[in-house]
Image (cartoon, rainbow, N blue to C red; front, side):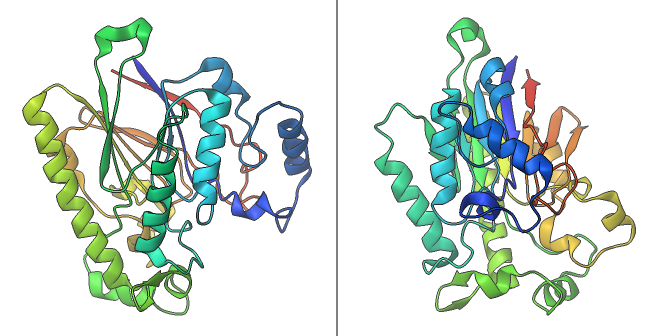
Length: 306
């Protein structure tokens, strides 16, 4: 089997420069544990279990930290674990960055390219594919294709995209629209939809390209936004929470047609391990320290796929 660790929404920005707003005894214990381990990143969850079990790949599905700090963490994790890392941007990376959303993507891409010659194997993916060769002890597995993109959303989860976009941009909607620059102004729902359509078209073309060359290829798709309704907390779906369409779209038909081995995502702070046909649907998210139960004790799991 191919073994990969998955984590997202670490929100290291809440503890990188100062303790979180509500530091708990569990966070203080986590901080002490990290500091006692040579080479361990000084923020984020405890990774000792991953180092012991050593996956074939670590996937970071966005909202790791603001700006370039997410990439810094990716390199620290790659060095500590000695495994390749695939990193996809979330919506928190471009928060308050003067470069805006696309500029932040380019900054991270440029910085990752500078480090490409190092032994640390970190791949930043925004409408990009990285091919992970099989481990030496399992060469029969063949390569694994990891496709990564932010994805965005079409706001059509509940059937009324216009209403969902209006809510997301309103005073009780997403803070993204007041904190992320986009071109000459602030990011808008229209900008999210545009990126969604671009990501969707790229995924369709890329999956088709890979399948044409290798019909049985192992394909893992990584996005920040959720591609299926069950990415949301069921309560939000049952109550038709107006914020849900900002976080999740419904690409069930594409998943059934593309048949990827796995699809991983973040953003919703809700963990999922489910299947749709042959596709494993996965999220593993830490969430906000001091605010969400279990964030301090979060440990990223390892998943196995054929």
